[in-house]
Length: 268
Ligand SMILES: NC(=O)c1ccc[n+]([C@@H]2O[C@H](COP(=O)([O-])OP(=O)(O)OC[C@H]3O[C@@H](n4cnc5c(N)ncnc54)[C@H](OP(=O)(O)O)[C@@H]3O)[C@@H](O)[C@H]2O)c1
View 1 (cartoon, helix red, strand yellow):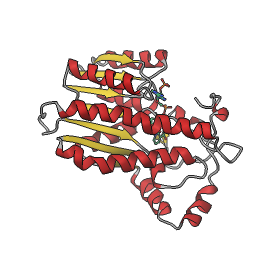
View 2 (cartoon, rainbow, N blue to C red):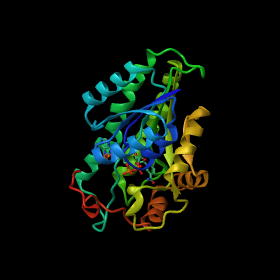
View 3 (cartoon, rainbow, N blue to C red):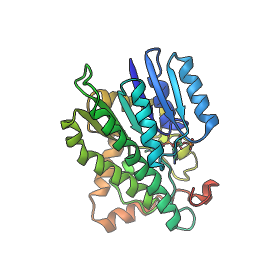
View 4 (cartoon, rainbow, N blue to C red):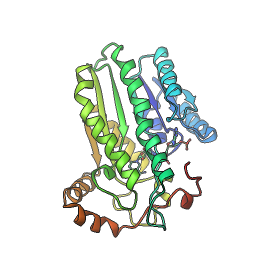
């Protein structure tokens, strides 16, 4: 029996995690904003026997997130919360990102994670310990982009660096409260988020494989799940170089499309 809440479950990694967790003993609370895609993921999870509840909560809405997580936890002990929802954009063809885009990225990728993780920590602190000795597990999806300064996607990489550093720094306090808090740093995963990237994506892997790696790492109690390992090692090595060298190397990659290049309003 497993009860999990996942933000950004209407697409990509979040949808793959939901499907991987869907079984007849499972209760899933799935969040996202696109009603049709969220309903399709929920239906696929129900086909696997899981009980599924959906919520169209925007992770930027602190009060709505706290209310959703509290309600989900009232029905049955929440074993797992995944703060997965995120957006990405870069400098596009202009070579610089706008202030509005940078603020939008931090609002979803950083504040959205805080709006998910804090209510989950508060809820789980009041739960009984399970068979694994934990009151619950919380994962926040950062990125290997957290390890580098990224001239082609400055706010995206910075938002992920903040998530990774905060989660790792807060993990010992969470552990003392009986909660496993983990940072997840994937490399390139084949989802709508990466579909429009105009540059090579070494190690690109399907979302289903990423979901399996994440769930295995969480079951093992890892504090940081960074994969593929060689991509994480490379990113950390580049990030450890003197800044001008790292920036010169990374500038060759070019920019991820900006919001407008993705056909999105700026800010989204
Ligand atoms: N793909 C990669 O290579 C990669 C690598 C490293 C890390 N990541 C991270 O993994 C996470 C999932 O990304 P993905 O690749 O699966 O992207 P995706 O397919 O674009 O999915 C993003 C999800 O986030 C949701 N979302 C976006 N803004 C939201 C908001 N304000 N409120 C609630 N939900 C919101 C989307 O829901 P709606 O569409 O319904 O709004 C969607 O379900 C992100 O945090 C991303 O940064 C991805």
